[in-house]
Length: 499
Image (cartoon, rainbow, N blue to C red):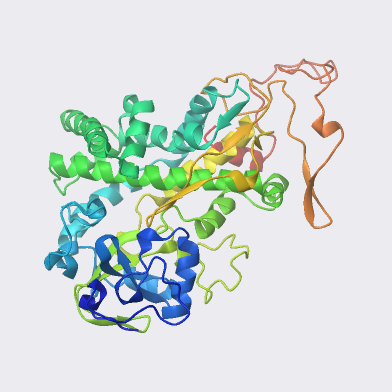
């Protein structure tokens, strides 16, 4: 099926193809993405019906292609001579089919920023972002993520229960990104609520966007007056000569994109740890590192399931479909990551494989992906250090998601754990505060099972208490404070974690 752009808007008399359900279908029997209650299932139906590139409809029956194939997605994002992100050439927009109040207009509307620019202008704007990211000290970043974990966890650690989405995954990335950008004092519940409200597109989204822009404009003014070594400082001092508006708008893109992607990624990894004993046992047993766990979830649950949008600059062919100049194409990491041609078994272990499309590719590949990875990796590791016996409080089947074309969000992740005292934010996250430690996990007969016995019982009151009591066995001498790592690997690990 190779539809003409106009035929997707209602001129074609064709009905639904044989065997296809009519529900959620529009003119020409094409699927309306925004009406689907199960996009994963719909994508597989479209793949079976049309192949790696399928025609679909958006709100108001606006025509669009969705790219489902892994190789085709790479071709889309890595061929700037054929496809761009400048929506001003999109046929439905130039032909007046897109109303000013179209629900997707905030995603589609062209703006003078690197995400939509091309050629020399793209290089000028993107160069400033890349330079600011390149200046990031990742050892200092890991230290700050650890300290942010301490602050966030201190807010609920004594309660013995929490929602790891609303109280953790949505807060930690904002706390870290406010620090990275250069406005740590702006981090609070209000800015987290504003970001979530903006991303949900509620009735107050415009006011929330104004609140965030106000904070970023104040940051831009401060940085212009006194540039520091933070992200904003690098933008205002870059030789590209960004205007104040360009600086604040790019800060907004970085803040919101990094926040949304990292919050989703962090929540997804924590969910997997809590619902899958085998996954958790691999982490605890050393068969899987936290970075490997993060990469696995980038394959299985990319933070953005679909990204708006690319546009054909000339007539071409993609995935066996005839693409006309001005056609719009959705880049869709979620279905592309499970393309049977590259992943015949969608449950297969993908550890060590970074060829997923979670961060895009080509000229518009996410510039801050390593910052996001760091927040997620340290965020998972440090939380499990603080709360080693954390458990899901409801059945896995009761977990709820909200789904849109762009992403799939975990609504909440309620957990319980042994109440623990607050810790100094400058202290390395630790569970060594006298509370019982989580039971160990082992693989028994192909399934993960908790070990029973002393490991799951409260530690006896003697002889070990915190801090350690000196014993007379060692020869006399000064006591180191704190005890340094005993070998090269421990010293390297301590340094890498920011301590």
